[in-house]
Image 1 (cartoon, rainbow, N blue to C red):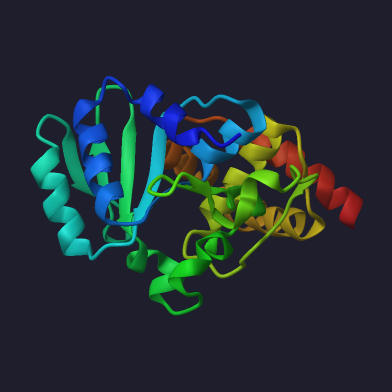
Image 2: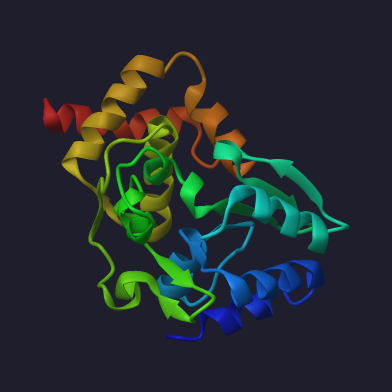
Length: 226
């Protein structure tokens, strides 16, 4: 599969402003779409594109200027780590300057190591729209048999732990022993303060796995790992 750029344009055909912005950025900078959009295209050949994450090798102020120039009808706001969320009628797009990516900004990795910055191995999928190539040939890597930690230092660890359970359910993948232990700790430390559902609502806009179901799954591991 090498036609993800065509699929991207097909998905967002009705969002003319977005396509114009991406065309401009691709003509001048490296533009990388990563995470769920790429992963689902490779794993399933389709994507329920509620949101899309894109990083651009560009200065943040130049990216901001480009967004304001091309986007007039959508709602623009600042997201985490000084990125920009563009909310269209049916989809939101998060755009970051590559240099503002958390692990790169904090000098854990260089700009060419984007796939090494993700917390979960299941997120290490990216496609360069400006050159129509997959980053690090991620398209020819076999689908993982389990979800595991790729880079453990992350400012949103709790959210990623919750995501790993959601993604394991979606893709029918096992969860590594290390992640199981971290999920057990999460439930034991925060089971009474609604963090499990609160973070899901903030990230997904809804509760995918209720706290009771979440705890039931994790408690099974606690018995097995005792």
